[in-house]
Length: 343
Image (cartoon, rainbow, N blue to C red; front, side):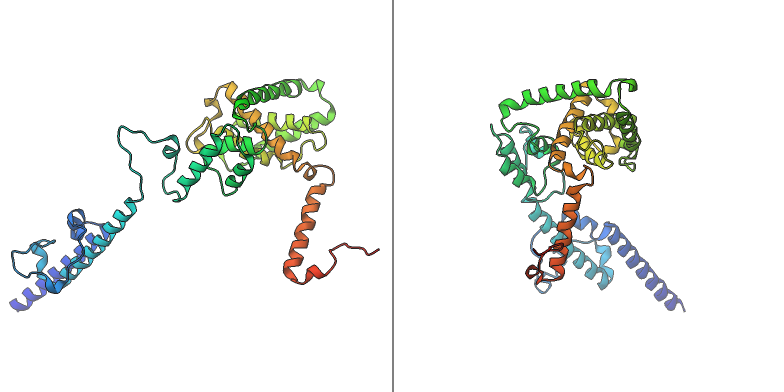
């Protein structure tokens, strides 16, 4: 009985030790924890050629020599460790290194972790185009088609929309003049008492003040009173200056991307942590002016989407209907278009 007890106790001890080793392996500790930290990346040796003498070095402790399964686990863990280290070494070949005395460039510093390998080349292309004395807008539009790095969007959007001139020597002066013009429009049309507005203007301002709190309600930043007042000023001034369309629900949603992009020049971090109260009135005015002019340029190319009967939207719906018909019937090109009346 005593030998049976000893055998059972030894079996339990071995099972518990094996279970503990598996748990430690899953946690990244013990075996092969110490091995992972010190193991060389030499190619694995053939087990048949390994020297069995006691003098040969081992990568695991002598207490692990009790069972063959422990040896197999160690060898598998070592093989996994070796492949992991080799993969890391290969990946590190493609990571740029910088000396402590040589600071990284602005483009590299703002480059996010986990980005695509081609992003660095795209940043260099954008930098080259934007630093030219005269920006070639065709190239910039083609380059921006696949996306623009976030911190370059304000400059790129101003250029491709035609708000900022392509000539770098004139750019600062034009932006200053346009921003002052926006301030004059706000003072002339918005900062006046309701007694000086027509009934249509009062109704329009009331509709805008109702729509602004509804704009992106799931984003905390847009619930700030200062943000809603900025949107209200932009939209009302835009409506007064574009009487053909005025204000139509949905234009407020078109303004939000511009507001976020131009605010990103002055506010950092997550948008949920942004606050307009961190900005001076002059900066807020410049941001509003940039939003106003870029939104105006955008609407210039699609104003008939917002005029009476919305002919622009009807035209797009007709094109979509024609496209679906052609896809459903490959031979539809032989037929006359929908709505065709023969003479």
